[in-house]
Length: 445
Image (cartoon, rainbow, N blue to C red; front, side, top):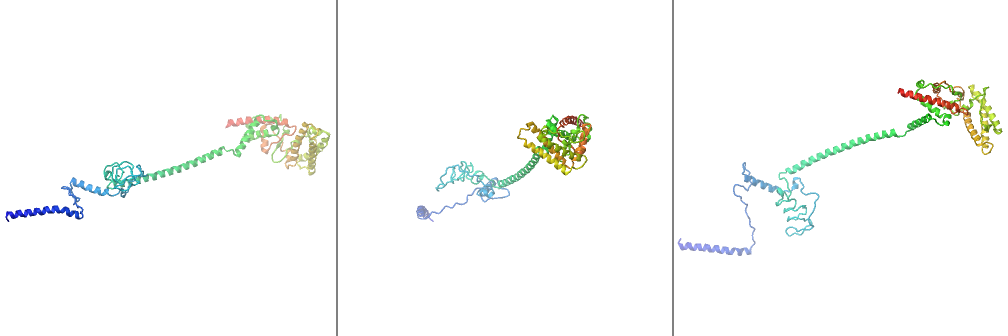
């Protein structure tokens, strides 16, 4: 080919190229632009973008592989690994309204955050575009986490949390068992204290035996310290001293002082076994010829009372005579005794409002009739004969008298009119003996 021909061919090729360059924009204006498709980014050797996993990869290849795996795992939400990244309670510290993302309307869940998604669950300022769960500037959160929350890509953090939760559960179970055991021990301690309180209360509660012992101790202390004469004559103080002596035991009677009773008129001391009613002490005095001797008060010696008093003395003498023979008095005799007594009682009541008797005479007569009533009741007792034989006070000393009374189960009965001196003398002897005996017993103990 000649030079001119080659020159012409090159000029033609250049013209076609210029026309193609000019015509391309015009053609593009009339059609639809197609998206540009880029091929995979080829990283030059020695990194293989296909994930080369040889037996001996280079350091750059191993780093590249780790990045690829990390980014893949980062796309998985944290709750898929068993961990809840959302705090509780959810607190919105930002404004109520905030701009949305990409021109979308504002959302009520917006908060103070630079995240383009306007997450409303942010409690702190964050520069993460996926939420405000951390202070990280990484677009994927700290440590490659989701939404700025860190996690372990290998799943060890979830396993660790599970092990920690299981350990806390076991600890709580053991603590609950310990608390339950402490509650059981507290119940046992409370029950023991309740029993101790009941025992203490029973020891302090004033029961009937304790009250009785206290009353007896008070009565004995009163009997030891010069009681009123009326308590001595009624036999109350004598019986308190007698009970104190008996408590020491019958075998210890000889240990006490030997108190002589030769100066005490024991015939004027009345005894009883407490089994019957009445007191036959008024029926014991006798005259020189062996008849009943009644000590009538001055009121019954007046003309209006003398005759009924004489008839009552006669009927009483017949009844006492039968008792001394160990015989029961006749029914007619007992009836006469009761009728004569009623006559005297009625006459005294009729003269209560008159001036025939002085107040002192009336009081003395009333007291005498009350004691006489007790003597009449004793006549009806089946054991009335014992008042004149077996129930006599016997003994040369106090120890012998107490032994006789203990053997027969006797106690002191009230004194009859005129027997007061004998009772006062016997009281002094009993008090002396009881005090000496208690001293001897305390020395032995």
